[in-house]
Amino acid sequence: MYNAEQTDAGWRSMSMLVRLVQRGGHPAAVAPTTELGAGEKQYGSFLVDASAYFSTEVDYSSSIFASGGLFFTGHSTEKQDGWRGDRRQAAVITSQRLLLGDTAYDFRSLILLQPNPLDWSVNLYFQGAQPIMLRGPWVPWMTVVMCAELYGSPWPPGHIPDVDVPIKVMCENAQ
Image (cartoon, rainbow, N blue to C red; front, side, top):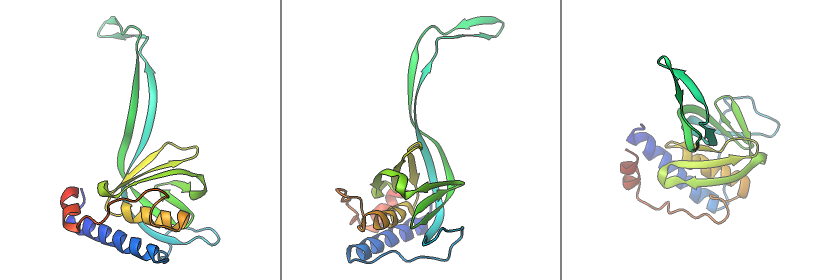
């Protein structure tokens, strides 16, 4: 759980960055905390709650030996879809990639970005990787940083969220 100070600061920073990018501005780089490539700039580092989406079909057509006897489950399959692995990880956002724990996600491999600032989250779909969902008070700000780098606008093309909800209401919803 995040406290009100964190959610207030994250929402205010996102709102100010949205206005800056809408006026043609760009996020400010910070001192790097990780090794950067040529021309790469770091914009921030913070904690996020990260989940990956898994879609699998499980086949239960086997028998097992349990409690001194054979237990047969019969033949059935079950679809197990959903977000799993919700755990807090360090995230670093740069001009070219997102670093999440020990994994780097290059913006050139990004297929789809689905922001949900009212839920403090974003879903990211990178080529060759499981879809990931990031949540936390700084995730809406990070989403605007990514969109400014990728599209030159605060949000992906065609997406205009209602971010003018008063900060007090947003922080109450995050508690």
